[in-house]
Each structure stands twice: as C-alpha cells, then as structure tokens.
Amino acid sequence: MTAADGYIQTPPLLTAEEAMLVLRIGRSNVYESANRFLATGGEDGIPCVRVGRQLRFPRHALEALIGGPIPWPLVHPDAPDHDEHSLTATDTPPTESTTTKTTHPPNPTNSTPQLFTT
Image 1 (cartoon, one colour):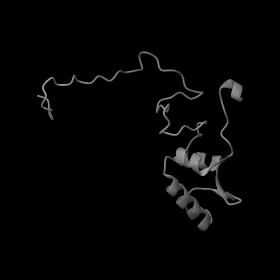
Image 2 (cartoon, one colour):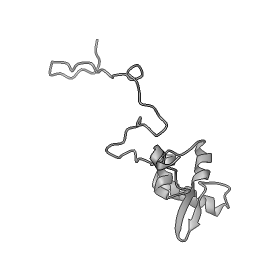
Image 3 (cartoon, rainbow, N blue to C red):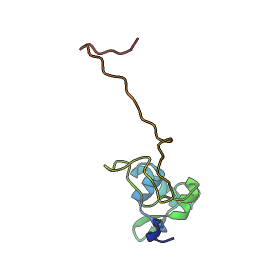
C-alpha cells in the first residue's frame, strides 16, 4: 500500500520521543532503559542503536516488544485533537448501534452539595 491508499509506513528507526509515545512511558524512562540496553549488550532495556550521538529505536524491535504493528502517524496523548478512539486507516467508523451516550444525573437544585444521593 502507499500513502495514497490511506496507509503510511512507520519509519524503520524511531526517535526517543516516538518510542516514548509507542511505549507510553516517560522520556527519562526511555533514556534510562536505552542506556541499560547499551550497557548490558542487549540483555536488558529497550532495544536501540546509536547513530552518532543520538539514540534511535528500531521499529521491528519495538513491534516485537509490544506484540504488534505500530500505528502511524503517532499522536501525542496531550494533543488538542487527540481522540483515544480515533480511527486508523484500517478501522471502520462506528455505527449507531456501537456508540453509546453517557448520561449524567442532573445537578441538585439546592445550594448544599450532596455527597451521596438517596
């Protein structure tokens, strides 16, 4: 498939920030785990390679670690338009029967906050 088909291939080497998003861990944890991988000769930590002074994380190693393909492009969870249930190129839109609406009880009209309803 090509980008025209709605599929964009994940790059072969990911940056530390991209690995952070894939693994859903913090930046410090990514670097600590990567340095542990390098220090132990690959016995422990997150698989990575040095490219000059930078760390890169092989896509195939991260996919093996998470047990599946990495969706691309990555979206930061704090992005304003991020939706936990957003569609990827292989997903189908939800139908009326699969969507649910959350209803909230009405606010009490008295001025005293209620901790429990009876």
